[in-house]
Length: 161
Image (tube, rainbow, N blue to C red; front, top):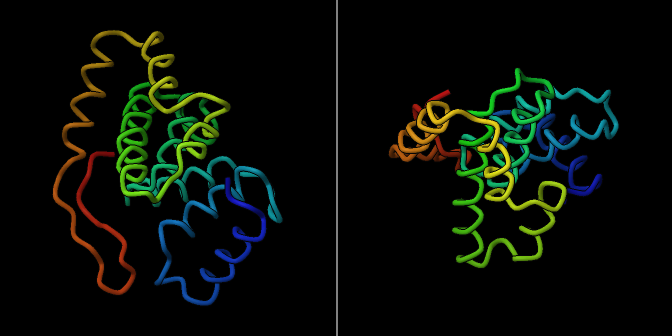
């Protein structure tokens, strides 16, 4: 989990150099607004920051964004989006774990004790087969090639909203 110290550090980075924001900083700002650490709690702003980091394959941001969609916090409740983001979070966490970037324990700490795949299965129980098919289609479209911004290292692509 992101600490207050880390989040404040990211906030200061953005204030000083807003055009060089990393996905980790974006995720940290999402946590800041979600928790209300040093700012008024604002789920909508948390979702905006999580979205930016999630679009760059940050699995923690993808998981947290999925939770916002699942609960309808700061965004309209949307099980299709929640299902998609939980799936992408699980894929990216596995890749990060295989690369040694994310520890298994950290994965288990996410989502109030649920792994992204477990959370996705809970959401799937509330969905119609048509909604699941729509989510799966979005997931397939998500794997489009990406370009990396040479200044920030952030990934950019035209991906489904």
